[in-house]
Each structure stands twice: as structure tokens, then as C-alpha cells.
Image (cartoon, rainbow, N blue to C red):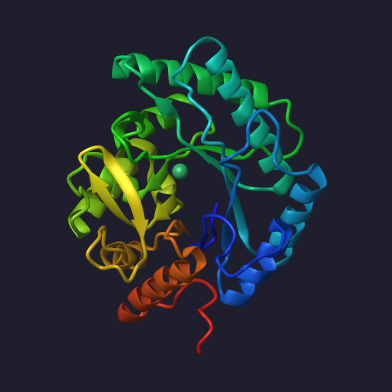
Length: 298
Ligand SMILES: [Zn+2]
């Protein structure tokens, strides 16, 4: 849970070549304070040593960088049989290693409909997540939150309503709002401005409570899409692609939101800094102090 708005990259900073354990120090020197570790290629086995996960956690705490983890892409909680069992194992491995790191949330894409009626796919996913939750109770250490993410393609389970349902039905679930995915999913550019952001925040508040809205874990990038959803991420300076970050930055300042904003732009950390400066600017315009470390000047 963030104590203030926090900003950081999805994966290693673009100018950084070393091990993951060195990332928190690097981010802090840039003026960033969140890091989403990418376990997206992990299969049945973890892609790192337990000692390295623990070391990453120590470094993150030392430099006041909030850790989250993006779980394996090879997870489909709407599946049956062996595919479902493998998916549950993979998510559990991610939760275990996230717990070694002290990551506060494990973000994941719930699954694919693959021809199932939507309600049936959702019910299967709820059952699977409850099992994950039960089996994860054997993990020693603090259990991270489960973070089902709004997805970017209409073939994937994960429109906003489905993500809310998962969070209503499964204990320990928090919605992860990928704004670009919401924008791209239906192929129409769903986020056109302040009112669209506000409608999403209000719906989340109504259904899941103000604590959830104030402390949301989010992803942001400009995005290109087709009728089939998300195609390609774009930099913040590629202004022909939406959604616009400015109205969200203004809402964060007005409503005092302490969102964790993970940049998924092609220039990850560089654009995380752009987003951070926009939120700082929004606070300044309202005459309110930015509740965090101000970006380094010059
Ligand atoms: Zn994702």
C-alpha cells in the first residue's frame, strides 16, 4: 500500500544493465520510488534464486522503493484440467517469490475465454483464485495481495466489471487498473478525458470502497489499438496516441489519490519521471504540497 503517489517502471530501467538487486538504488537516484519486477517469463520454476529475491527486498527497503511483481504470462485461470493446475502452480510460485522480496502485490492477467461463455469463465476463475488463496496460506512471510489486471484484448477475461467481481468474490484481491488496456480493449479508445477517468474511479469506489480507490495499483502508457484491442505501447511524447495522462494527474491531486503508477512506456523509467512531474505540477497548480519526494531539479 502506498503512503503517497509513487512512480516507477515495469521492469529494469532502460539505461540500467546490472542485476535486478541493483535496481532500487538506481531508481532512487533518478527520483523514482516504485519498481514492478517482471516474472512474466517464469514457468513452473522461478527465474531467480531465493537469496536474490531477498536481497532485492532488502535493497528496496533501504532505498524506499515500493516493490510489486508482474506474474507469469503463462497463466489461464479460466482453463480446465492440467492447464488450470499448471496455472495455479505458476501463480503460487510467483506469490512465494514476491513474499521473499516483500512485494506488496502480484499483478496477473486472469485468463482467456477460449470459447467459454463469459459467466462460466469468470466463475471458473473465481474458484481457481480461491484455491490459490487457500494454498498460498502455507507460504511463510507476509502474503502479497492478488492483483488481477484489467486486460487489453477482448479475448482475455478482464474487463473492469470482471476485475471488480473477482475482487468482490475472493479475499485478498485488489484490482489493478491498466489504463491503456481499458482504453484499447474494446477497440474504440474508451478513455477520452476526465469524465471517463472519474466514472471508473467512482465505480471502483461504489463497489470496492474508498480505500481501494485511493490506494490503487495502476499501469500507464500511451497505446495503439485495433478492433482486436491493444497493439503497441508508445512514449509519452507520441501525442497522437491516447489516453492522455494529464486529466488523471489532475484527479490524483484533487482527490488526494495515492496511486502507484507503473510506467509501461517503451522508455519505462524515463516516462515514469514524466508522469511524476505531471502529478507534481497538478499539485502545485492547486497550491497543495506534493506528498512525496519532489523530483530532482536539473
Ligand atoms: Zn499486465
